[in-house]
Length: 541
Image (cartoon, rainbow, N blue to C red; front, side):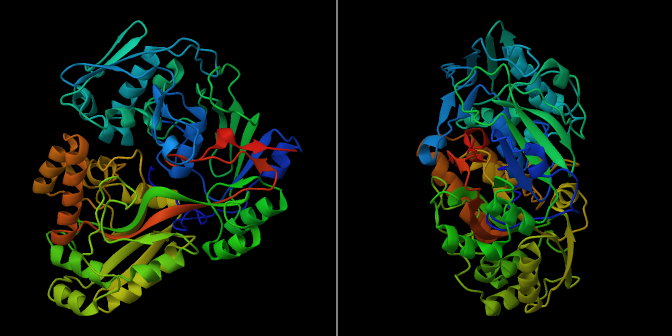
C-alpha cells in the first residue's frame, strides 16, 4: 500500500519482486500495433483486482485508473497530486461537533455496465468491506464509523452510521477524525455496482465494471489483466489509451528489454536494481524514459511479536536495530533507491522527526550486550520475496545477526504468497522483510494501521509484526483523535518512544520509485499517493 502493502518493483526501490514462468499473452501480441493500446509488462501478478481486497502498490495504480470516488487525488505531480479534490461529490457538509460528514452525489457518473452511480453505490462498498466473511483490509480504516464494528464482528449486516437519503450520503463517526476525508479516497471505498455488492467472496472478483476512466474487463491470474476505456465515463480525468493490457510473467530483465526495444510501454513492477545506474546514464533522469520520484513509503524488517523469539523481548529487538547494516541493505536495492532511517515515520511525512536512536553504522558492541541472554533458541526464520533485492538483503541480515549469536534461516516466496502467509496470524516466521507505501498522507497510516494490536485478526493483517502492547494501543488511539500540529507532534513522539523502548521493527530506508517507460509514451505523470498515472499516459504511434 499500498500504500498499500508495497510490491516494490525492482525499479521501484528494488525491494520485493518475484517472477513466474513465461506465460502466454505478451504486450506485443495484444496490441496488434494499435497505438491506442498501452502495453504494460509486469513480472508478478497483483494480489487482487477486487477493490475491496486489492492492497498492493501495483494494484492501486490500476485502481486509480478504474475507480470513481467521492473525493480523489488530482492527476498531478508533487504537492498538487496529494491534495484532495471533488470527484463524484463536492466537499462535504460537516456537523458542528465534527462527527457527521454529508456528501451530495453528482449525477452523470456511470459504471461500465451502464448502471448510474448513486449515493447507495458508495454505501454498498462500505458494507461489503465490513462483512466479516470478506476479510477486507479496509476494516482497519472504518472502525470509527458508528456501527462498523458491529458489522465486522458479525453482529449486524449494515453500518448504522452510514445513511442514504436520495443523492446524499452521510457518515456518522464516534469521534472527530481529522484523516477521514483522506481515507475516503482510498480504493477500498470507491463506488461499486449492485452486481459486485452481492458477491462477498474472500478470493475476490476478476471482472469489475468500474465507474472511473477505465474498467477491469478481465484478469487471468499470473497471465494478464485487461483494462478498457469506460464507454459511459463523462468525468474530467484523462483516459488517453483505449485499452491497457498487462502481460504478466516475464522476468524483470525481459520486461526491461521489451520497454527499451518498444515491445512494451511500461515496466509496472520494475527492472533489476543493478540496472538502475546504467539506465540513468543511458537515458538520463527525468528526461522522458527513466524517472525517479519520491514515495511516501518505507522498507523495514518486521519482528514477529507473537513468536517466542521476540515476545516480551525488547532487548533483542534493540540489539537487531544496532546490528543491522542499513547502508549495506540499501546498496542491494540499487541506484538511488532511498535513504536510510531508524524510525517508523518516513522523513517525507509531515511532522516526522529524526530518531538517531541507533547510529549511522552498525554497533556490534552494543548489539552483543543487549542480545546476551536474550537470543532464546538462538535461531530465527526470515521470510523474503524470492526475486529482486530481497534475497540479497536477507544475506546481509544473516551476516549481521550471526555476529550477535543469532542464526538466521531464510525462506523465500513469490511476493503474493509471502503476503498471504505472513498476514495470517500464527505463521511460522520470526522476521519478514516488508515494505509499505502510504495509503494516504497521515501518520495514522504508518503507526495505527501497521502497529496497533486492536486490528489484528485471523488473516489479511497489515500488522505483520503482531505488535500488541496495550499501553501503545491506547496511545495510538489517543493520537488518532488529535488535530493540527498537536497530532503530528504526538505521533512523532510516539514513533521515537516505541523505537527507543520497544521496537516493533528494524526500519531500514525510505523509498523512491524508479520508473521505466518506452520512447513512444508521453504525458508522464506520477501521483505521489498512487504512483504512475496509467490514465494519463499517452501511447503515441
